[in-house]
Image (tube, rainbow, N blue to C red):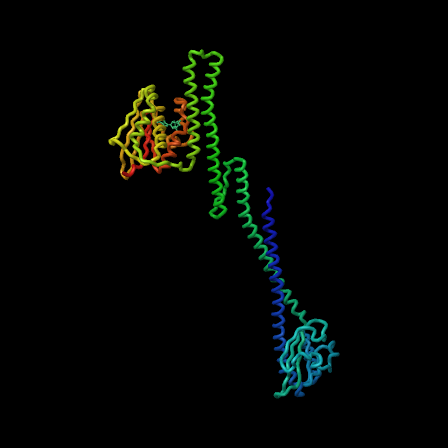
Length: 472
Ligand code: ADP
């Protein structure tokens, strides 16, 4: 699988971080420069003040010679890298610290910088009206002697001297940002990895599910959203797996249950056609064929009933009716089967009648299914006992108990599943389809009632369900 998100993530983050770093650097550079110029200007002002106080006054009062001051200015120039100009009262430049700048001597500062108020302390940045080839930081102040203005002192220092300081700061900033970039890169890689690897695993599992391989589990044990997604998908896979298994079982059961009656119908019809069964026996075998078609009809009806009930509460037509009467009439429909198998059915109830509120036709079906099973799984000569008892809270309990083959404990929870047949009963009764109890349970639950089973192998089974009494 080609990983595409990771490089995209990286590229995007790196672009964002790169642009942010460039912006930070350019802003930082600008503000560093501003701060450095300001600092330099205030340092130069202090120097100017010092020069004015210490030497210029001596000069103007005649205590210091021009040569001596000029020499002193030259020393200052080389020491502080600052060009010094001294102007007289009129603004004429009388001394400069550097010999290269001597052509400026005797020029009037007021002509050079008309815009600057020399009577006050000033600071500028630039070529000082083309007096220099490069940008300079300049500052100046008036010099007074006994309260009288005697001249001006002006200092110039090249901005380029700040560059090395600025370069040092920029370098430190670059190093810090570089380390930050590496840390961000490592963290980003770690977190992207932590997100993208599980996504890859989930994707792989999803592909397996699409192929019908639901055994693939996503091995993610995390409590965050990705962990939740993984456990939801694992749960979905197990549910799909059950559905898939159910679908396979359903098809194999259905095909088995349809195939066996169709095979016997085909066999009997072929035997009739080729004369193996003589015409005088037709009546008997037509009876058998009719039984088989009834079996198929019952199976089809069961499937239709299941489809209608399937998960949704069936539309119940509730009415008040006598449950004892309903049980009696259902018992009567089994008279033929009971006679054949020598089975006796007894109805016990302390009540003459028991009015319940339920869907009458569906309850007939429930009682029919339970008695039908009780007869099917009873040995010849067996006994079926049906009892109707009043419970507390306006409920009645109906029990259908046989002394037949019973159901093993391990199978008891499964008999309510569709198409589930207990293995040993399969051979004993070919009429079993395994849908009667599934329908029965759905009907009882649709009424918000309960149905339970008590059974012991070779002792018998008892199915008990509840119903709500009709309000009198
Ligand atoms: P069917 O539609 O074939 O009657 P059911 O869903 O009613 O199937 O029953 C499912 C399985 O439960 C049967 O195959 C049988 O193994 C078992 N069973 C149901 N009732 C009884 C009973 N009274 N005694 C023993 N086994 C029973």
